[in-house]
Length: 106
Image (cartoon, rainbow, N blue to C red; front, side, top):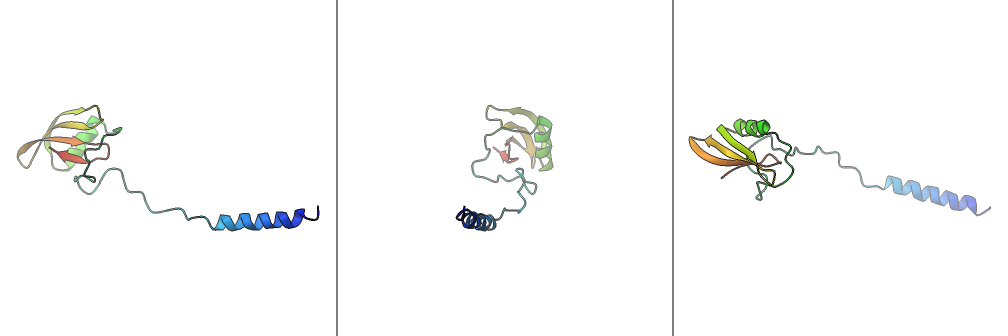
């Protein structure tokens, strides 16, 4: 029993020391999954396949907010990428919107 208290004290001190030595949590804000500043792709791999949470009207609104007009024929493909047709700068273009919000004219 006389060895119990010194051992317990060592365990408490070591345990408290490791609690203070933990790596701090990153509190910086997480950037949005969708670019709110421009329509340029954020990755060279765009459009990126993935579960798309955009509805058709949200994908259309995103295209329109970046200067595309006459957005039509939007369909979600097998990779969950919205693909359709639109006008930009007086030209007809095929466009896609991925789950990250990347807009890719083709």
